[in-house]
Image (cartoon, rainbow, N blue to C red):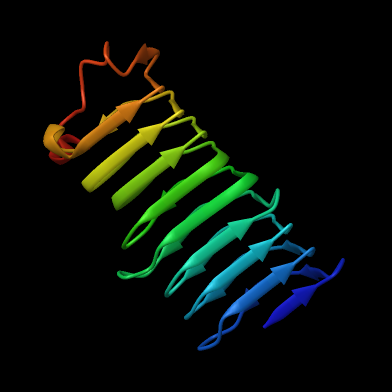
Length: 167
């Protein structure tokens, strides 16, 4: 299913076994796909759920949670915003993004972004130029931090990360 160039959908977008692409469009409802979801300069006024990967670019805005299946990744960049929790079965990659909610995944890479919430990485967390207002939950040997602040502290001052089992 594709929504393109100023397309507007009032209600749920459900593409069943297919992927969903929204390019310069707006959805006033949820987006559900058993496959991939690709959003480019798009607005979604509710949750996004994908069986596989979610890719969001070019100042897109999501006003809900983003969830993938067990092998799905979430990649967001280019001044996009998410007002909800990100939960990926596989990697999460953020570059120049604002998230108002938690970020959860096995491998989490956050560059030049703000997360107004907590970050859980069950395998690794890498922060570079990030601002995290909550705590980071990952094994300390799998944590990398540079030019970032976590819970108001610089990388070198941060007393975490916290044990992922306490998330």
